Length: 80
Image 1: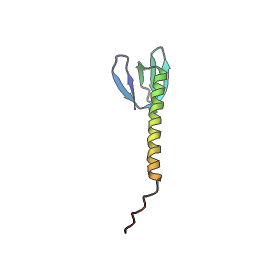
Image 2: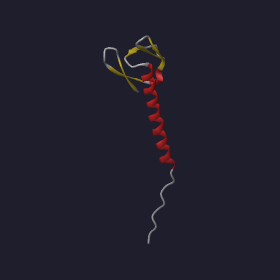
Image 3: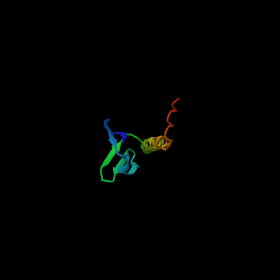
Image 4: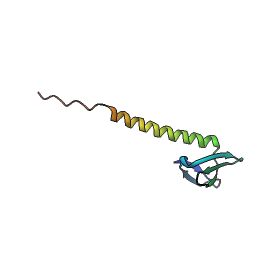
């Protein structure tokens, strides 16, 4: 989820996977696939940067998890 700001200053979170389009009119209009419309204070560029940052974090986390899973198990300690 990305944090956005309504024109009245209240914050809300939007699932970026539901975002259909962004348009500057001059305020930024965000339209979702469900038809909801939000006027937000952030510019289109800021919204896109937040989406890219979120997706980058998700991918980095998935890669880190896969690296952990791909490591071979530790060798058992030899007994003397």
